[in-house]
Image (cartoon, rainbow, N blue to C red; front, side, top):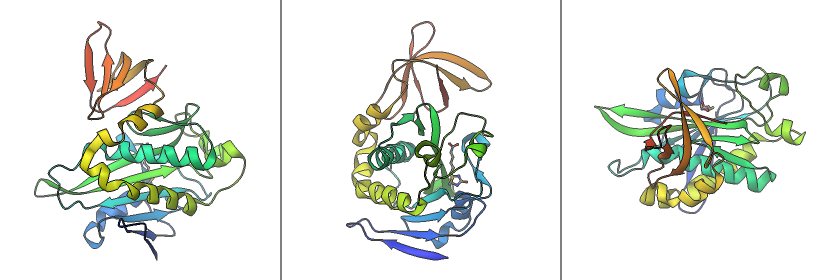
Length: 254
Ligand code: BTN
């Protein structure tokens, strides 16, 4: 196990690198009590990655980025738990745009797409004790070197950096960029919540002003996407022109 200490400003964080693991989220949850706040579990080889709604997060024999950020806030009362994935999606978008000059966009609440093809996903899981949240595991995967033949087996449109840009990349360098950026403004985000990222998040959204479908229970409902409110909820208009707010779900953009 390789432990690296990030030393950016006052927001120090640790990266623990594991050669191979079933799921960085599962590992972080199972060993939660042994880690400090702001510890990042990282692997390039994750064998049983999990996604939202019990989906699988695919890997192959190429080196990719699978990581889980462990957060143990001291004050959980006003902590913006619900917006953490949106904060991370804004950071990933920014790093991909700046570093690789690609048009990364957010599909609410936190998928990252390039030209409609998913390149990154985020899964937050909470650690509970006596009915209270004691911490959050913020897992994210980025398709860095995933091969086209692997992408073809995924049940939604997906891409990777190497397919897009026709070369291989070092996942560690990209992880460092993202962690530095994540912790740089982390305290401001905790204090202000979604409002801190709202304008940047909105600028990255690829579905506002469009017809969307949302899967709710077993039904797919049609909406028109209007905006995002100050709490990060999606504001839509339904088929009879009523405005509603969506808390969570999977959206499909037409
Ligand atoms: C999704 O889009 O459904 C979320 C995917 C999250 C995948 C990451 S990879 C690292 C971390 N460990 C897991 O098992 N899942 C998350």
